[in-house]
Length: 424
Image 1 (cartoon, rainbow, N blue to C red):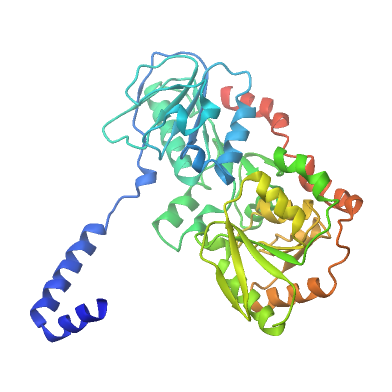
Image 2 (image 1 turned 120 degrees about the horizontal axis):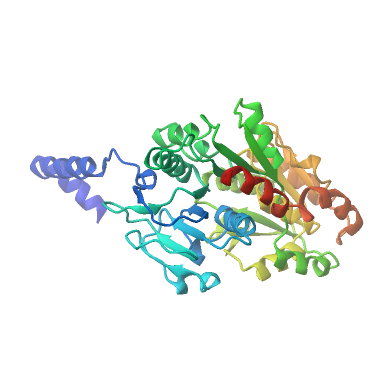
């Protein structure tokens, strides 16, 4: 059908010109000078006088609560512990019901135009054109992504003017990656990078010391900052002892997210194909977890079988079943999957990035310096030739990972100092 349309267009100049005109009009309509997620949150004076802690987070529905948002909610839960007046402002989500995330069934749900009350509130603000958020003099904010940091800075400036403050209030900026690199060199890149400047009134909280080191190396400086290290999810922690005693299969687990460029799915597939071409007859099998995708042909009858987005229980089973893991992250953040795989005793292939080198954290982790198909294939070659015991060396794993992964993320330790700074 498409070929017929193309041939018709080539024979009929009038049709070709009409299609071109339609294409140009559609393309012009898709151009925009706006970046929706960075649209300002307009504020209004509030009669509410109490101290209140606010979280600016893109969404709260359960399908969005993983990775960075999950960590942000965990951090905010610890930070706001014992505080009576707490509000979560959803910067990207237009509507929210308790059915969207039953974990917040005891919270009240309001709208931007509602009167201001004490207690624990959720305010969807994804549709905020012509509407205002009630902000008091003693409201303090926690930003969780670059566009929420822009909103927090603008609210901070509004408070300074509206309440005739002598200095702008501080806000907390949870930094979980170098976010400009989520985009090609562009307006979003520039806006994201701009949030790392003029930081006198920002309290930065870095997700891992490895990420903080990258910011230091790149010349960014924050007057006040904290770092935390990741911890193993409680469900995985409970499943780990049993998994460490299991006999492992000749099975490779790939952290496969084709929709997330920084996880370099294509390079992983190229590396697998290269290894399979060198070993057309082998007993090894390959599975992918993270995102759903079609099975990927690796040649010689081998396929990368997608498991999709697993439940934590299913994920734990794979971590105990597979012998080798591959998880790339083209970013200064270590990412959790390589650490989770290593904590379960798998031999893990990941990548270095600038000062990031996870092989320094665990003998189970093998960091490649050059992200290429040949490096991946060569790493698989080494690990399949010398995979070690089919059971995990539990004592060695505990020694390797207890400092950097199993016993950390102590948000409670930074709670009091941060609250003193932002409410002083």
